[in-house]
Image (tube, rainbow, N blue to C red; front, side, top):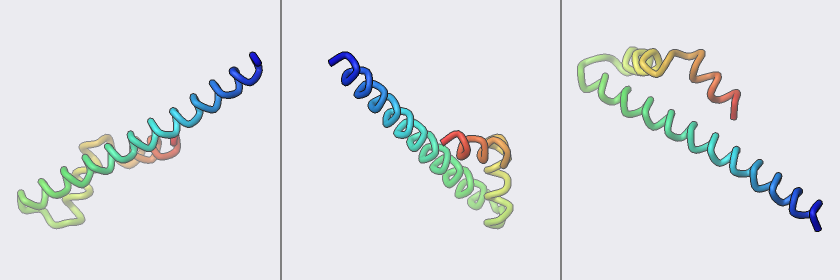
Amino acid sequence: MSRLRSLLARLRATFSIHNSTDHLMQELQSHLEMMTEENIRRGMGPEEARRQARISLGGDAQISEARVSS
């Protein structure tokens, strides 16, 4: 019975980690979109607005690192 409980605990932990990572990626994407929209309202073109939003969130390296961690 102990092995079964251990296995179930590991499975729960694995799914919990994946859910947390998915949630983090959704939050990051949401912030990127909001910042892009704000930059557009301030007069930037769409490409520059998105580029500036990515820079504000730590740049492409940090965003890619968050994706790789998932």
